[in-house]
Image 1 (cartoon, one colour):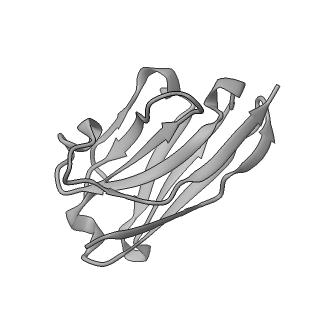
Image 2 (tube, helix red, strand yellow):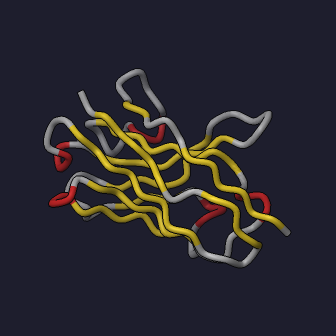
Length: 124
C-alpha cells in the first residue's frame, strides 16, 4: 500500500510561484503513475496533472498548461508540482495521488491512493 504525504502549501499572492512536494512510502514508486488533484470549497475534486512511472509522459488539465509542471524523483520517492503565475482561482486543497495506471489515474478510480492534502491560498 502506498502512503503519500504532501507539503509545500501556503498563502501566496497572485503571480507568485509555489512548489508542492509529495513524499511516498511503500512499494517502489516507479511502478506507480502519480497525479495532483485539487478541490476548492464547494466544488468537486478535479484533476490537475499526472506523470507516468518513469516520468516520460505527463498530462495536464487545460487551465494549468504552461503554468504548472509536474515532475518526479524516483530515487527520492518524491513527486513535485511547480506552480507559476498563480491566480486566486487556483486556491484549493491540493492532493497527491498514486495509481498503477497512467491512463486511469485521471478518472480517480477506486484503485487510487490519496494523500491528506495541502492547502494553497492565492490572494488577489
